[in-house]
Length: 552
Image 1 (cartoon, rainbow, N blue to C red):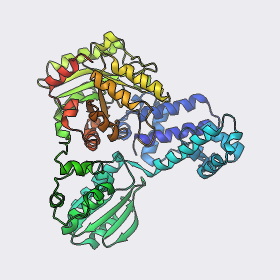
Image 2 (cartoon, helix red, strand yellow; image 1 turned 180 degrees about the vertical axis):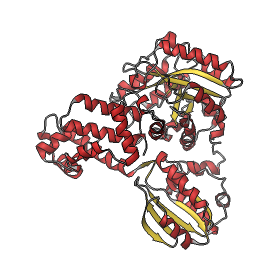
Image 3 (cartoon, rainbow, N blue to C red; image 1 turned 120 degrees about the horizontal axis):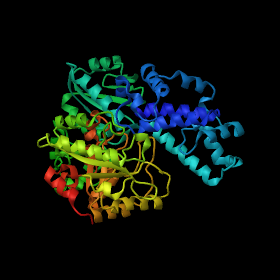
Image 4 (tube, rainbow, N blue to C red; image 1 turned 90 degrees about the horizontal axis):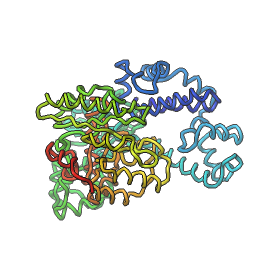
């Protein structure tokens, strides 16, 4: 159970309280706590173990107790009690994007709509227009929201699928009958959301491995044959496991990795002992799994134009992290020590700015005091450097949450949008452009504002934003937070093709969060990103020169 799962439970409590007409302050309290968890990369399980839930702004003792109850028992008694008062189908209405608890209440009490299917039917028939504020456009938006909801329900974020894959592969590789085991499909290609987790196992004793898989407590057995087992986890993730002879392993792995478009571009695959050998027999160099999408990679391989893809080892540091000074869970020194142990050469501390009250944003005075502490620590850190920065809020009008004289004192300025996500494309574009053209902004953080499966990107004119970044030298972040992966691979590729620099950051709010960089690197690799496209592959002297350059 991750932060988003817990946040979803708190939001459901808020919806049900609102549905039954409870006090507005209680509704707001649960929604505020849910928002705080959604913005916090530190695992809620770790906070609960440390007894630190109440350190998160918006989470008091009562809500912390309910979170602990959920993590311990798998449910919240209070939520179960609320659920009894509202039919399950009516509760499902509140999951439709853009359809809140009050509207769900009206749909149920006035039209008798108690399921998603009945909602869809009523919208298609034009029956929703009988309600106040409803019309053809609202009905169309509800139908689109239903389509989106059903799509989201089928998908599992990569960040949830990869730990399952790692656990299963570790177990398989310990079995004496297993020669080799690898994940395949979308997971191996590091697609941001997946619907299944294919595993390929090389073995000379498939029946024995099949029987052992069926006994695993990982999930429910859906199918079982001598050469194939299909499991389903509690997350709803389907795991088809193919059991093949060792001599067929490479061919099966390549086939099941896909994508279909990539395999079609390759043509018939010759048998060979390794994937590298299969590509060589096709007259091609090895094509990394992240590129196998049918986006011109086969042609590039034939012409010797494959990129030298970014690797985790290319990154010299992280330019967007948080400490306990705002909404992080570790001290400045703890974050620095963790970064040094990872081999980083530098770390930018970018705690939130003052207007983000939910994240305990820093005032100018607190920010300057933090700067003094950083300068004091830097004197004793040898060849490691702490960079003093901020994640400054981009306000609704595009202005920044700190005055220019404060921003001028910092090493790094990451500007991000955290509010007013519902503005139209023109307003969001102008908002971003003002931040990009600001003389002190170095990086635009999580540029599209999305949260996978929970919040769509806000709309903006991508071409105008990329042109402004190229003109000013402002970099765009690829957030390695697996709940964001923002920029996505398509926009990251458009950015580098437009001559815009990227930064792979974790947005870490804990020492564990610093370990998320591989997710961002995978996203960048899918975007054909090379080390030269990424700011934090620079050595410290080059980075400092880049940060000190005049913009434009």
